[in-house]
Length: 251
Image (cartoon, rainbow, N blue to C red):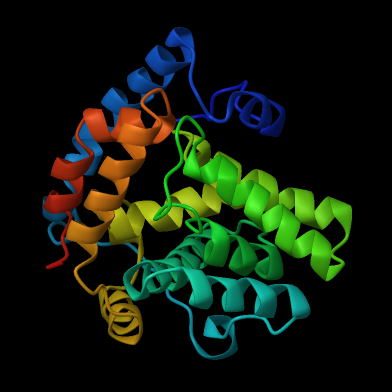
């Protein structure tokens, strides 16, 4: 499923992430196409033959230690609930492992930074301005004040703003795509079959889900109410809660 055109940062900044009717229908078509796979997560993740599965070990599972990543991690620890903070760590691990499995070149400093900040505004909805757009602006301010180079800050900003666009996960070398793929594993069990099951269990033990299904559904419902024409509202109206609750995780 190729990512759609027209959802770049210039669009996000101007519109606040609000969709036109044409864009809504375009993304809805992508969602309906993906729905059988997402709803089948519980069945397909634990049945049938598995091919080679991915995992990260040792140094690959240690977050990069740079001023940018330290600032992002500190911001997430200060502002996110424990549940959403742990989700952010899991998104980084799952997205990085999927990129590794597909030989996708992914900048680990930028990806860890993006993963820590991708939901930084989800628990604080604002009328008619998508949490991913506000999260991108939040990240841009934080990293610019830190002295990050403009091009690298822009990559993080664009990745966070774009991760809610259906179809972007087809490119795992792109920050938005890797974020969407990692979040897809954690939210829906999507692509879980590509990851080593014991390794996934170890990641969850390290970063527990802490009633994740209930809390993320509540946060997404509040976001959908605040931004009724946004990408999150589209997902919520067309099965988000059902797909999350069908995911092969206990909570």
